[in-house]
Figure 1 (tube, one colour):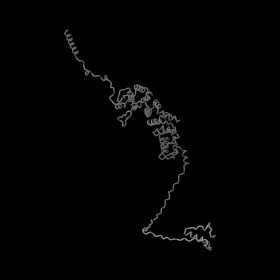
Figure 2: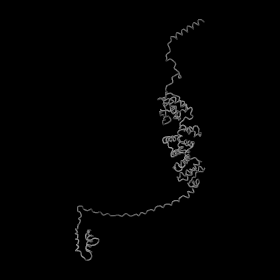
Figure 3: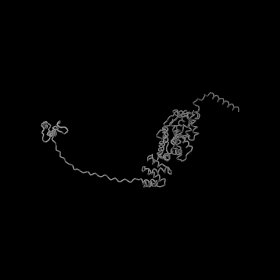
Figure 4: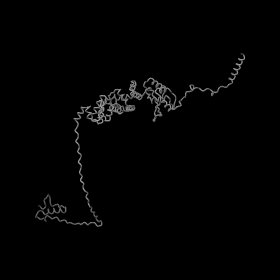
Length: 428
């Protein structure tokens, strides 16, 4: 027992001296820290392109959660800056409603990013001056607001609900308060043509966002509330294929739709106009009885036959359709129809006499010889002397008048001084 205790004491003493004389363990031989114990990286190793490729495929709630990630990525942009850019570009997040008016972002930057599955690049808006308080306000807005989207985002959700035929009343009320819908409503209210909000909403949803956005941009510049601008607005949606716009045009602009639009627009209205409406029936009858083109008559007849539940006849005539749907106008047409014009006789065929060619034999003319000029014979005629008064014979009339007449006819010389007022100087 005593020996065992002595042995233990000797071993303990030897172990103490060994440990005491051993040098301290160097730093390189220490055990490395775990991943949890390591320093958090100050910046991400990825670039903006890689982070955007990852964020672009996330949902709205995932991107909203990334608004609390302040890790640096590249060029001073953080992960939450890029997440906010994806929220605005792909989910139409309304940052203007999320932040108060005195805290709106002031330094937008634009990044061009090209996805792998698209040929054209996408321009993203990134704000580099947002503070922690602004991000906290946006996170709170997302938590409390049911529809934290812009007008375009709300419009897209309403289009989807329209296809599903299930409208959310709260979503409709939110869209009605947007500046885009307010601009359309103001166009109808200022002109005195008040329209139902449901009718205007149906018109807008039957178009696309580009058409509505273009109209709003034009109104911001011009502020045009005239009748012509309202008519142009409805015609644009009719050209886009909106049946509600066609019905609203007949309801609000009856005279304009009846007489002031061309035949192509009339045909478009007839093809879009819903059936079983009083305005549609009256408009089709008026177009059938109007002096418009045959295409308008046929389209009006087709609309009336469909409404009556009948098949459009293969051998269609305007008078038969008029007698069936507008008989009073058919009787008036028979009374006032002018008689058919008489056939125009063909013009007489002119008879052309054929004159045989006449052969003329030309005789050459010999030219004069310039070396031997022709001699012109001249004759000197001596004028007779004028007889004196005492030499005039008295028998057989006035001899001087006879001489004067012969002298004037031969020499074209008039002898004056011998007669005056048809009385000869000789007294005869």
